[in-house]
Image 1 (cartoon, rainbow, N blue to C red):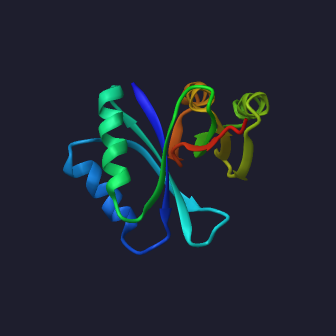
Image 2 (tube, one colour; image 1 turned 90 degrees about the vertical axis):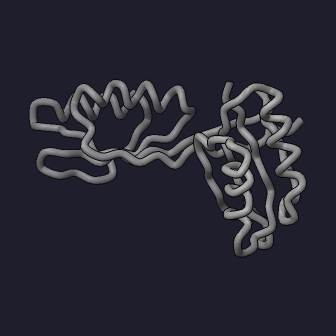
Length: 158
């Protein structure tokens, strides 16, 4: 089972190393990790996706809360948050296939961000499920390069 954990940390040198070290030192694998600034310049938010059962998640959460620079840890459960991921990819697009690639991009609200003679660079954002469906359709044209940000998440408010 995959869990999304949001960690508010002090924006200090070495915090990422300590958090990643906690995971590796205890044998936990991080599926995705994203770190970025918050409204408060003294804090950053880490969004980490980790695999494991509820017992593993409970252990991870307790270990994170013990770290000095950690301000808050949230385990996001279903319906408690919204999430997105950004993907940039380069896909083969000949004169024969370009229109079809562009049509799929329109359906998925993806943006073509660079045009070359035989390739298109595309930006797509959405849930992991949407991204995976889009990529499976693009595979038929030939993906020559790809990068993913990993999940970012925001708690829903009541």
